[in-house]
Length: 162
Image 1 (cartoon, one colour):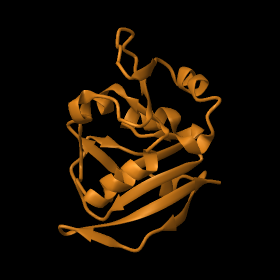
Image 2 (spheres, helix red, strand yellow):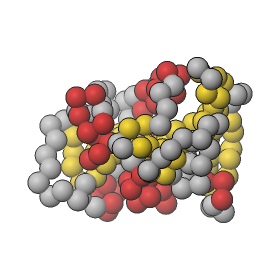
Image 3 (tube, rainbow, N blue to C red):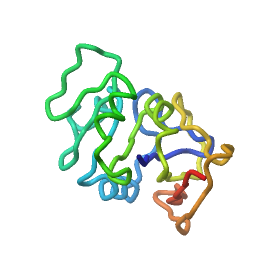
């Protein structure tokens, strides 16, 4: 599996169920990186999507503890093992974990690559992604030139598991 996330300087990813930043090029990167793939998300992330509906042109998997949740257009799983079984026959580079914080924590060790948009800004957050720079099992593999949108500086970074 792979994952995709946008983080602040302190690895914050969200506040009150919303993303910290709205950067059009990052949204485009997300769309092109996940198009045609299997995406794995939590219930709260699903609720934050337009209309609270699964993403088009992707196989959507929702990981939740809610035993009663049913989502038209998505497979609902209740444990990380159920997710692993659901994607067992899918090449790892065709499965993208897209959040939120609890889902990233549960599935990080199953991922081999992380696409991280690093925004060079402080932002008040209540959900965070693990700091890959401090983890011995991950290394920064590549990063883009610095980009800017409405005063926000950011880079597209790729981390790989050692």
